Length: 253
Image: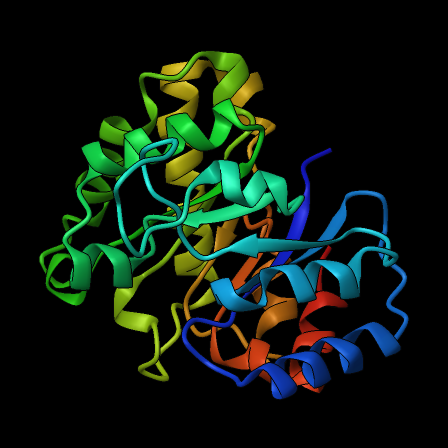
């Protein structure tokens, strides 16, 4: 049974007081998660330790970093290593988010290096892929996203690739208020699973969780998550509102 994951990406938002209040409100809801249901909170680096302490007694709640560097340690001022994350007991890291790709020019090859070191330290990557509007308009989104998977994931063994969570982000639906229809989400998720199956085998592909990451909110989460190849969501703005994210978590199938 694949993991169903509601992952909050707080991005560069919230003061420490607001962050603690948000987590406290969500924990206070006493959400009863099934064994294969997980809530993951990708918080800003300064809040990792505090957030980890707040959720440590809550079943199937986990903290994620929003990024990491590709090297173990060294003279890389301002970067954060997976060794640091591991020392804080952080279990997840978001890699390849569209904003990292766009603003910091992170390439598929660079992301492959980050994935390698995350797995080396037993931290689960949430690997983001997805197409901008120009690619969607040209109807070449399948080839575009397949290349992202090929160049970042195809060097892994069958055992290792199953340790990675994939998040499909239609970039044209992030922060724009636009949302892919549940049918569009399912179509792309099914295609991604086929790409993985062609490389690693159907059984392996069926074990990989694929999240949808495009303007998920309380009002559409249940419909999107109900699609057979959608295994939850990577949630931006709606994850900053306790009531919204609680509803999203409860929408996992």
